[in-house]
Image 1 (spheres, helix red, strand yellow):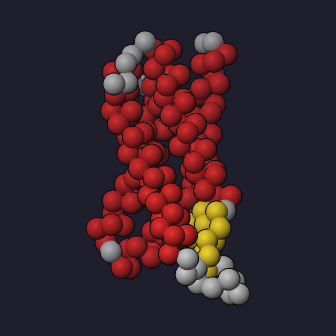
Image 2 (cartoon, rainbow, N blue to C red):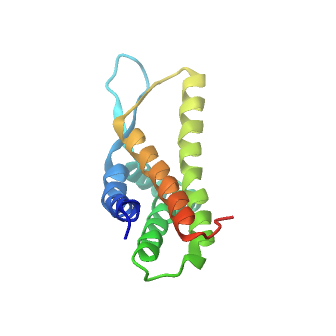
Length: 153
């Protein structure tokens, strides 16, 4: 096993721990008026609110934000430990594309909220951690594809 191979394994396994931390970490701090305190919003707290108000949207966001990146990470770990054939990499690549959709949605919400100008939104450290997890997963997928010689497209 090469040094790069072990690095990919360790980084990918670290994502299995980091994703749940990112889901619970504050993504945003939002408030109605500048004088009032801001409420912290995480992936999990946002999903709780969605499940109470819009079950379909909550299901879609749950798939994009939780299941897609985590299943992809588990799949890559299985490929790294030769428990799954590299032929599944295109499916894992597709799951990675689904996981990026939630980053787009969060960016869209921030842009919309700031454009309205009624409230105040601050980006919190969890958004950076969550984005880093998604980008690390994309990088690990790319390096795995190069190492196995399989095409992800």
